[in-house]
Amino acid sequence: MSDNVRLERDGAVATVTLNRPDRRNSLSDPMLTDLGRAFSELRDDAAVRLVIVTGAPPVFSAGADAKLKSSMSAEERRQAMATRKSQFRRLFERVNTTLEGLEQITVCAVNGHAVGGGWGLTLACDFRIAAAEAQFWIPEVDLGVPLGVASTTRFVRLVGPARAKEIILECRRYGAEEARAMGLVHRVVPGNDLMKHTREYAQILLAKPFLPLSEMKARINAIAKTAMPEVNAMTEGFLERD
Image 1 (tube, rainbow, N blue to C red):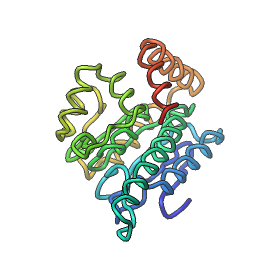
Image 2 (image 1 turned 90 degrees about the vertical axis):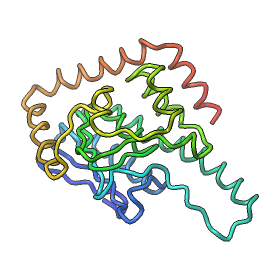
Image 3 (image 1 turned 120 degrees about the vertical axis):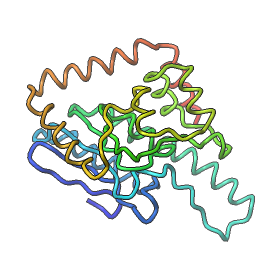
């Protein structure tokens, strides 16, 4: 599809691969734009019933790409970074909202480190299968920036406020088994067999009738949002101010 993102179809399964291995699949604005385009294309493809999201080795994603021109002055860099953060958050949330809202079932194959926005991207998928050597962490507070509201909200919905505070405020790394124990990863498998296990799991889901599967996904997502009205109202308010 592009240098940043690969989109491959195999029957009813589509695989979207983050493809910037030289930058550890960090999420630049062009990559996010291409991801959004890929997910929008798949949303309208009735032949695709399941979407796998993964990263080109050796990692899943190192998070936001904050690289700026070295020739900028300190003030220019400060202003550029502030603008870039706002643009990135809006673009990142649009991509995640599109991914989360797909009728197709989505499975994230986490083939290596998932950092910051990279970890956040995995949370927009229905299922997460991680390589045993994968690591997860949110370094934003240590870097002096807040985690985006949308990713924060997904952490709270999935693990509750107490555990979300631990993950986001401590900024420590979690192994794949720790992430599974918290409910943020569904399965942990040997790294060399990650895609094999992911495709086998995909076949389990594909064997089920698509319409009730898709409808139940939509119902569960709706219930998860309506079950926390205060959090959702706050999220909308923060996003409007970003």
